[in-house]
Amino acid sequence: MPGRHGQWKVVAAQIGVSHEALYRELARRRAVDQRGVAPL
Image: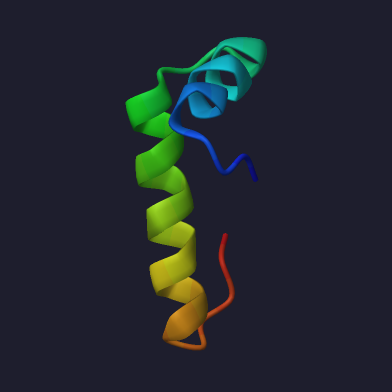
């Protein structure tokens, strides 16, 4: 995923979500992966 902050906004815009929502979803999936549970 993008390393620079501004690139998150570009990716989020391309898929039609806010950059906050994109970041939250990625964080949620990382947390699930670390617990050893398969993401939905």
